[in-house]
Image 1 (cartoon, helix red, strand yellow):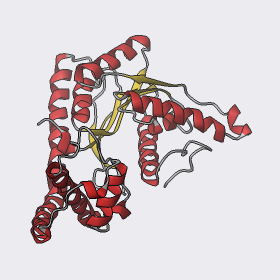
Image 2 (cartoon, helix red, strand yellow):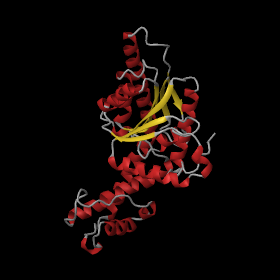
Image 3 (tube, rainbow, N blue to C red):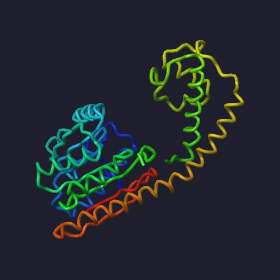
Length: 317
């Protein structure tokens, strides 16, 4: 069941993010109820620190170190934390909560291992290591660093949910959003061809950036909004007359996009299973070296989220 967040904690969260954080906290509470040695948490790829902040509040009340690779995300997280204080009720101010620390760190395997080892040197207690929708290689690096840092032997708990598998160095949309996503790509590609023909700015010089979905109802609507955002006059950008050619391209692109939607969940499930198996082998090799590593570890996959396909959490406890 979804819990009610304390006053101000949901400030800045989308309904989707609130769902993710709520389910993550519920799973953490279930796991930590049998792990009294876990006194703090480390959030890898903390972003705007929604999960980090929730971990400091009831029911977990853990001290949390949120680690993020983007300085702009850290700045945004600090602003959110500050703004949330304005939403507190007077009676909440007396409630106990954990301490939240935000840091900008290099988040590759070596960087994450260093974070885990440094925090271990500071505190001998067990930690909860979190990665909620860690993009691309960040999930893989977190799994490897968890093992190589000695966290497994120290009885730390890991919960990791991957994301953006297309960004790994080694994808799925709902049918409702597939056509819109495809149209966005086609329209952007078509506009770039027109800009190139008019010797307009390259994408690196002047980017369109995000536009509302309503801007993609037709190409003319998108073109007008995009050029305005780029501070360009519509009459200065040549129009492509081969409308039929672009319609044919759009149909071909739609075919491949739908094929991607069908195969995406299957391929992503195999990726998660590969990570699960790889982590099992790494843990087996690591713990085989130390016969006194402690009680038997449990490696599990949890179907955690209801509102999206990327819902599988890899758990070590």
